[in-house]
Length: 459
Ligand code: FAD
Image (cartoon, rainbow, N blue to C red; front, top):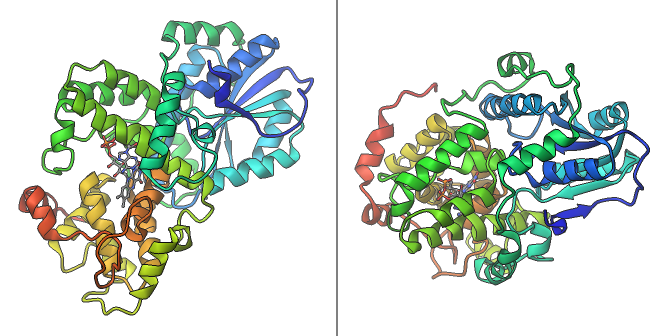
């Protein structure tokens, strides 16, 4: 494994304890997980045992029954796989900087490994944790193909500036992942018989016990590594061949639907890229998909990592803030409150259909997601309110929400992040505009509406 994926976050020397701990957080998988592989190799070289720990914080912002149900069902599979490999796995409840140090002490942790996450909450957890732990803490970027810290040392202006940097590093980082047999023999070479802590999780029991927001219902979508790989094969076999032409048509449903699996780290983006490269489809489909999976996705991590205001209007470029401020007093034809948006009660049947898709399916088709957010800008009293509403709804209902892609998606649509200035117009200023007529030219809007119009909602 390439050592350059790994960053030392503190200056402590290796402790005397008997174990290496991998604190799993963003990358919730056993296979193709660079952080677990790095921790295990380190344990082997230093004759330590390996332990895996996951901390569940039921107060994680905007997480609820829908998101925890998917997360914990995925973790159940992680625990089962680790049990077969005889690697101890512990689930901790509470705020990680409080719970983790106690657990690390109990386990005799000589060195800690974690995975990379650019979001504020996770960064703050690590800062607080590093103040109290007494061992080295390595962070391994197991989420990005090109590690975020190496792709660029600063916030990039857009896809056009990060693309050449990523492309330069891809030959080094988009290498073949170690074969599964190799990964298995690595894990078993350091595992120990530890019946008590290798016990498997019971997702139902855990969810019943947790104190969490149960107002957002669970989704009927298989979770976990096996389901993620099934979804990947389904996409490469049946839809990748049409991706370039039809990905923006919500009626054709040619997107991969991999975002929940990527968000929860149940699938490695590198594995996805390698499978897509191997697929027997025209090259323009592969190129269009890899642009989204690699350049756009890694640009989102770059933005959230380097911009502390990634979910606020002050995180936008100066030109965008200026133009939006100039139009702040423009008259809005329609104004809606958060509950009206949430309950799909606008005058616009197309917007309501997208919101219903979000409530019912935990997602909105990628093209409609842009329209959905831009209309929130048009129908709220200020840009700050629009951004707040869009992020709140996306994070609360989208299974792939609470993700750098979500903050950047909302920022792109509302505050022009990573976009350029367009012609000046009311409310939007120079932010790119979208309207229903544009949608009508792209796809069968009535068919999309009719799918969701009559669906019964809880409201
Ligand atoms: P595919 O088209 O099959 O793409 C494959 C993967 O590439 C995606 O899973 C994703 O990881 C990445 N990708 C695709 N489009 C983008 C993009 N525009 N920016 C960054 N990465 C991309 N994506 C999320 O993962 N979580 C979110 O919460 C989220 N919220 C969004 C909100 C708004 C307002 C907008 C405009 C976009 C948002 N996106 C979000 C980005 C994009 O819409 C989704 O990634 C995509 O629709 C997910 O479906 P898919 O996996 O089938 O995508």
